Length: 152
Image (tube, rainbow, N blue to C red; front, side, top):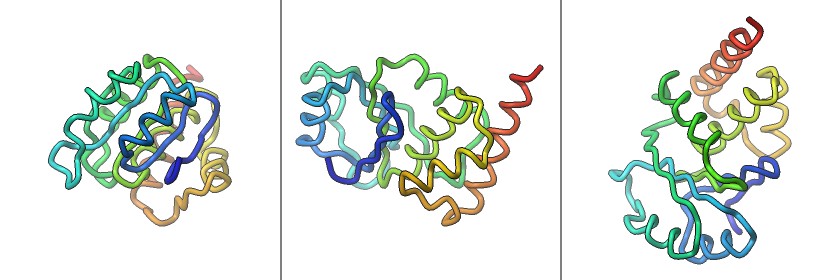
C-alpha cells in the first residue's frame, strides 16, 4: 500500500486510505482499522466504517483534531483503544502524522522505551519528529510520565 509505514507486526500507520487500500489491508490479514480523522476534515470518508466491516475488518473511530492539540487524556484514550482492538491493525489519519505519533507512543509505553529510543525508531521508519517541535515535546513528556508511573 502507498503512504503506509509498518511500525511493528501489530501496527501499521497510513494517511487517508482509499477503498482499494482498505481491500488490500483485508487481503494482507489486517484485522482492524482505527480512524483518527475528524468528520469535519476535508476528504473525510463518511462510509469508511461500512466499507471496512463489509470486508470483515473491525472498525474503530476516535477523532484527534490536530497533532498540536493533543491532550494527555485523549492520548490515553487512543492508546487504550489500541490495546483493545484486534491486531494486526491499520491506524490512519489524513497524512499519517497523528497515526504515527499515536502508534509510536503506544509502542514506547507498552515496551518500556525511552523517548529517545522511540524517536530513533520513528526515524528508522521514516518519521521526521523534528518537523513538529510542540508535538515532539508532548510525545517526550507523555512517554516519560508513563514510564515513571509504571516504575512505581
